[in-house]
Length: 178
Image (cartoon, rainbow, N blue to C red; front, top):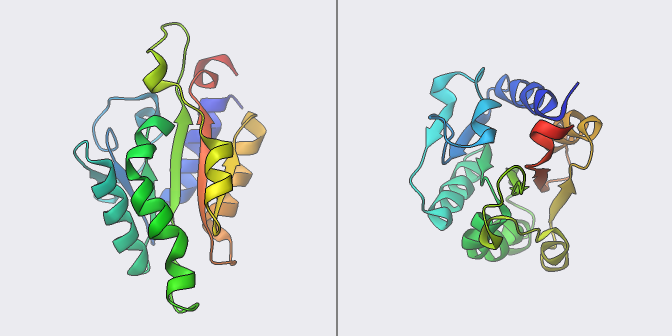
């Protein structure tokens, strides 16, 4: 399967779990390449939010604390930077701060922005994977280099029992190239 087809397959799998909700921009309404991968998700599971990234991850954290498995979608790493407070000081620390009483599970979907056929400029193509791996202590980060990595990685993120949340990093250019 192609990269974008594997993403749709993975989202369909996640969408079947009664605990999952999808939150972010261009989730319920089209607007990014990621929107196309959500076409089969029931509308009642899609929560469109305004461009307010820290609020989005705050809502995501609240959903996770209430036993949902939110799939929080940030179309680019550069946008996820704006939610760094919620990511680093809250989601990454719930287990430690609660002495193991809160084991939240969040799936964060982001990407390294596409540069082809049109370069969107540098504020949209950042790859902060390695930097965040150094900062986060309980959130796992998986880079999706190949189409064959996609479904197993999203399945692991949903079914893992180690109490970790997962950031899955896609490549925008691969949606049409692989």
